Image (tube, rainbow, N blue to C red; front, side, top):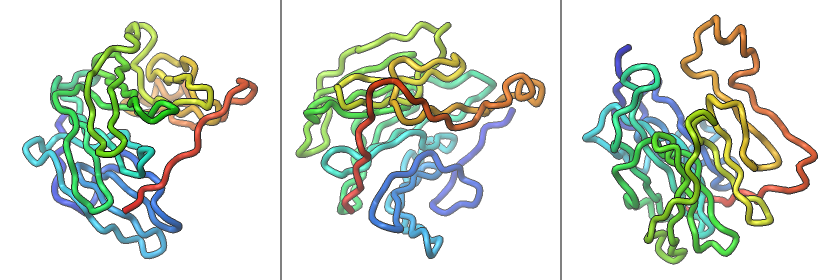
Length: 229
């Protein structure tokens, strides 16, 4: 299995790691290791940043708009073999309204889901390679992070922690890939993945890669923020 190499903004075939709301008809998009603004009607992207240039096999993964309407997203390495990733290659970046970018964290494994506490003063963040959820003091004025601490260590047999959401009661919900389970996750949707599954495995798990709506949990997720740039 060869490693995929990512290049400059707009390279065809670069995967889209995540998107977020901007304004009507426009979205923030993280593709390969680039960040930009997508005009949906025109089908054009205004690229704002090209990151991790020293790590050509990295790509953006999960991202989300923070309570101050900045876009926060993490990069991760491609697997060198099925289920094998080089540690310490990921970073967490913030895209500001003026199109500047700041690296908030580095030496991460696989940055995944993230969300903020109801008072906006804490960031919760998943590192899938460490099977962990960590929290950080969050400076809403600057987007800066401080004082990391472990919130939850997921046992490997539970799967890899992936998506994360905060509900309206202040409870975290985490979806675990390769575990077929959700640990108090968002009430609205649950996503799965078909990545790296063989045709035989897909026959056994035909719903892999689908999006599910889960009802009757008695809680609701928070509305998404729009990027302000």
